[in-house]
Length: 619
Image: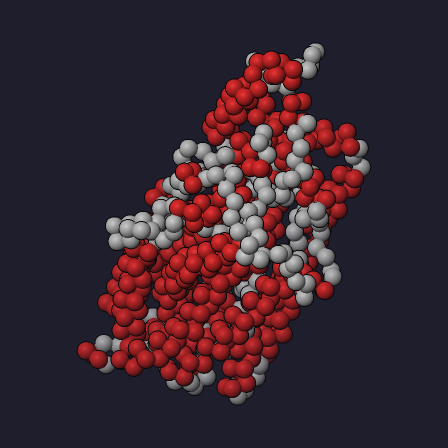
């Protein structure tokens, strides 16, 4: 017996919330199709089913019915998104900066988010698969209050976000401590020069780059809770081995190993956080995540200020003790991570934590709130790898290439200056300890400016034009560095460099921008990795702008930075125009369609994700 499509067309979806939903994979779709149709058959009976089949009209197979139902649901959802102005072009209304959230979150109010699960006919198509690790806590009829949810979110923040920030600190401590080592004559002690240092930095970034996707594949197979602690312990051991460096060859080898071990950390952690947070909660947590990254630039010089004073102890240089002692710190973080991390919200019990983190009731809240926000999260369990097909499809999505182009150059005007900050301070006549302490104010200001900048971007719903403002911040600073007289006061040079490096980095904003314009979970996952890989290429190029024959003022390098900042302004404006043009073109085509043509598009289009005519790009 086959079911007519008209059976479903009369199903009301008015109560559904507006959220983005993605097609299931083939096996999941077939299984869920069977479940729903078997339920329909057993519930309605043959006589009722026959009444549903319209005489003289063609009927559909089970698989065709499932695909058509999903397409029509997503098309209706797209109409709701357009009606709700979710995908509308950015607003220029600056009053959005002080608009308040009017959602009532009284403790006794129901916090359960409406979703497709509330529809008894559509809901079963989106139920989690049997392999989903949290399937046993899924309950579409489950309800809870804000008084239960909000304290639970705070507990998740303490247990998950605090760990994520500490883990990022352990990575960045090893990634950045080479800068403090430079203030203690690291290059001279090993018989190296600026070009050797640039080569080591390039090797690190290249290995970091090429290891991202392989690391993700391993992480998806083993689980982030296993792979991430292994990587932290690994880079701690390699970092400590730098105590025994004797020449440039050893320096290059340790840089390569550190890059391989660190490459997949950031996308792995972002994936891990998505297991515990809704899509609307994740951006702020990611801002905190990158704030921890910047905070390392404050803590690391303070640690170096004390550790480098050990120069001469045991007959060793201070930078050797720096590598060794900081490796011990991060090794402890790696061991702690092994015992701290859990596979999922429902898998928190361990031999050393017999009661777990959450009660059964709390686990149901966590699982159901996440799936109601995005049912597609149940399509990928926590031991599933990213396939090469996903990678290829994401690479071929040319509408994301403009953001990748931005990722290639956006930070170049500041990166060489930041990389050589401690060496520049030494060249200005500051001693080892003052050079480390004087690098702290730039990091404090960039953290503050980054948070303000990201907040403004989200409030006014603009990205490209705010990116222009960052380059306008950087351009006069690099021009000044390029023309500053040789005899200038060291304090005036320091003030100029501090202003330059206090710029509000747009990196968190652009990660979210890339995610939003991906418009599918799989493309979003792969595009995040691709964007991060492009940023690493950015770092490789940046590491080679300042050269040995251009020191100490790097006039040629600074002129290159002026050109790049000018190019970036043009690029951001071009990307703004491109996405705006794409939206206007699509809107014109969409507006010209009749209601019947729109329904035909919904029913028959093969467009997916950001290729859909009813999708609007953020810019």
